[in-house]
Image (cartoon, rainbow, N blue to C red; front, side, top):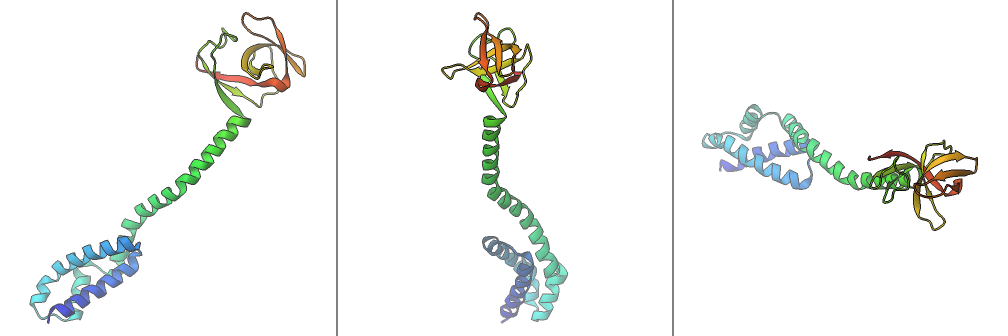
Length: 194
């Protein structure tokens, strides 16, 4: 006979706490079950004394805290971390897609890395170097190292000797100077690993 008022007071208290906690359904069921066990232990002594539902409710608020405060604290503790990870999980594919688009856009239009397998630009750029070619370069000076495509479409490096407006005169180690039209120039080498 004493259990019915006890259960009612605990359930009513838990209803108020959960209303303020605003948790996801799986979390709400788990947190409610944990709280219910704890509150049952807390009110076990009142079970032995013919306490009314109002007395038990007053004791719960006094011993455990006001339902609004407890609910908001649960919401803050569970909600912040879980919400952060849920937002991160939702936003991660979008961020990855944006990064990929930016990376390929920059590589296609602004700068592109290359590996140097030959000795055509030595000693400025040694064989085996990795380089970054700035594709937006439009003015070249004597001594600049440029990447260009030969008639077969193979990327080569050379040192600029002169820029005659629409054509570059370039030299490659061990080869005769050649004239390269600006349309075949990939860009100027701006960084290398050696």
